[in-house]
Image 1: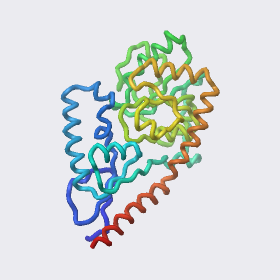
Image 2: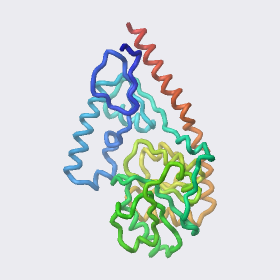
Image 3: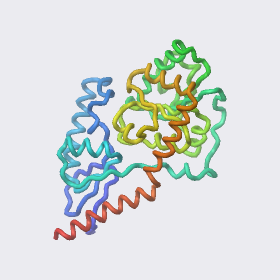
Image 4: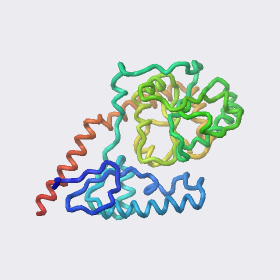
Length: 294
């Protein structure tokens, strides 16, 4: 087989090829070594991530002719930090097609009907920053005297070791089928995204499409994706998150402003077909360059 090009959606690739290679980059710990996440893990875990980072960075540089990043922030950091002089591009992620097919949506039943449902759509990884939640709840109840709110979290109760005092303010949903996720957004008032380490997350875009205000950790990747359409908080400061929640509950104008900005910001990302066309343009450019250099 003699392909014109080899495309790896999420790299790195670990071998040299006679054919030009376009490789996608989506490994956050390589570029965000200053993330607060690394202050929360053991020395052994830090060494593990460092080892992986060295190996994978070497492979990205050695075995790629063109790199594609999911955000411009990620592209700039990697190319400048690693002195990557080959072609590089940023192509944003997009929404899952289910969000454009309302006839496929399935209602999520038995959710709280109170005045404030706060959606925490997450997987069970430490960098998702679930550990901040008990203190956020404590501040909301003790400092702000809020009682009628609920965090809707897409984990099982056994996944987290939280104080019993949190139980009244959390509904554990477990893993949610894709067809039910739009319904989750519809029945939520705020989307809570305190993650400490990402390259990209479609959760931001989903919240914008479903017209929900976002509370997010103030980090490079979230700023790049959200622009000014989220309420940003100090990443590991529970009081900052609690203040944001209290503010949005009580400030309808701010809430609507963030939703409006989110709707506008979403236009930057296009559709899955737009993303595919960008990939093909980059691949065609590399193939043409390779043919001209022969």
